[in-house]
Amino acid sequence: MTHWCGRLRRGAVMFVAVGALVSPVSGGAAFGAPAFAPAAASPEPPSPSDSSAADFRRLTPDVTRQVDDAVQQVMREANVPGVTVGLWTPDKGSHVRSFGVADKSNGQKMSSDLYIRIGSETKTFTVTALLKLVDEGKLNLNDPIGKYIGGVPNGDKITLRQLAGMRSGLFNYSEDPGFFKALTSDPRLPFTPQQLLDYAFKHPVLFPPGEKFSYCNTNLILLGLVVEKVGGAPIGEFIQKNVLVPAGLNHTSFPVDATFPSPHAQGYTDQTASGKVEVSTNWNPSWGWAAGAIISDLQDLRVWAPTVATGVLPDGTTLISPATQKQRLTTQPTTIPGAGYGLGIFNVQGWIGHNGSLPGYETLTIYLPSSQATIVVLLNTDINHDSSEPSTLFGQAITKIVSPGHVFNLPAQPAAR
Image 1: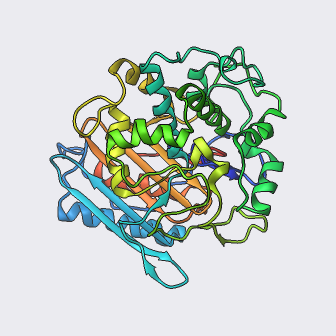
Image 2: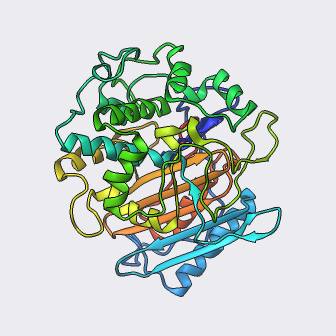
């Protein structure tokens, strides 16, 4: 759920990758050293003399053709069944295209109206809920987690800010071998938040709070519990009332079971007990909970990209106060050059947002403030290609063309989608 993002146990981070949930099957650090693999080849970027080259190019027929060609090349090289790509700007055009199939068994075409599991992009919603409570004066980001949740290792020292910023030092439950075995043995079984924390807390802390960055799904499970306790409602209900409704996100939901609205694409993963590719469409996402369970679609994510990046709702009113939003966007260094992480959000070469990944699905939702440009990528597999997340490959290939001065170049990393 975090790929930075993260895979179950083989995971990778994406924009953190923008978010995978699982970790590497072979185990390893929740946020291992980057193993960057270049994205599939794409057309040569425009000359720097192009006045728009450093920002965002106008989406002319020639540019959108280049984007389509690059997307299809990544699809072929990474063996991606289906993908939908959307690009929007206020003054340089927009472009939405779907390629491939949503269902390999019957050849159903991929289309832009399909629901998708967004994995670690869920983190942006959970942290937004937390920041709403900050604005209401009901909690402080410098509060220790132990003030709200008992039994947390270093709970008297780890702050809510460090949890949201991936600097807690806690072990990532999705990297625990027992968790991976339990999930893949029967991926339709539900998990409770406490069960997930139990997998994490049987491991020693990795480092003192605040010492360094380490992408960790455990952090978001704790923040989800804080939102429930302080907000006085199940997290799905709190997010619905305080985030989704104000933003007008009518096709986004926090499921409490494996329910998946129609229409949706089938998901294909190799994060399985056997290592063979399986259909993961109806797997229960409760193991991702506040770190990765949300479902959305292209148009809602298009709206969410500028909303989460600016704190401003589509009608111009504020969702998050400017002072609190400034804290969200104050990024600290990560293990990836050019990538910083704020509070549940990445900044990669100027692109603000998150990626998401969990078995069978990957997403990328990013916003470039300098040009008010949005890119959303949705695909129905999380199977790596040459150690790189496919969503990262798409993000890099597209931004090389449309924003050559801001290339989304986040390498895959263990456990964090």
